[in-house]
Image (cartoon, rainbow, N blue to C red; front, side, top):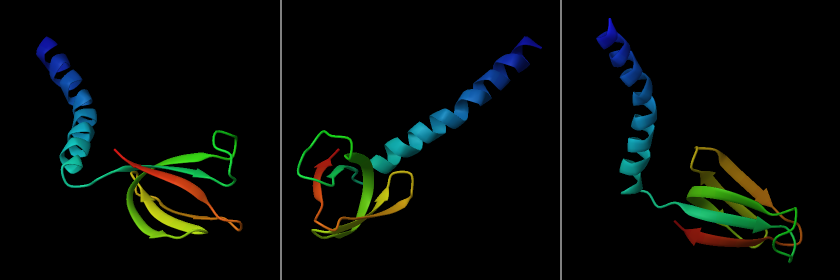
Length: 89
């Protein structure tokens, strides 16, 4: 009976380890970036947003479209222009 409990406890931790392994394995083939977006010229205020990006589709002065690490496709538009910084992880 004790061995069954140990077995099921090991199985509970497997999905978390599989996800970590998948991200590690995928990191050998996919580059990730940190994207920081500000809608005005001041960095560090309340309108700033930060994303972890796996792929950029389009980068323009007023428009940016990208795919996040979780798989969401995000589009950001700014009428007066966007200020953004891109760093490779």
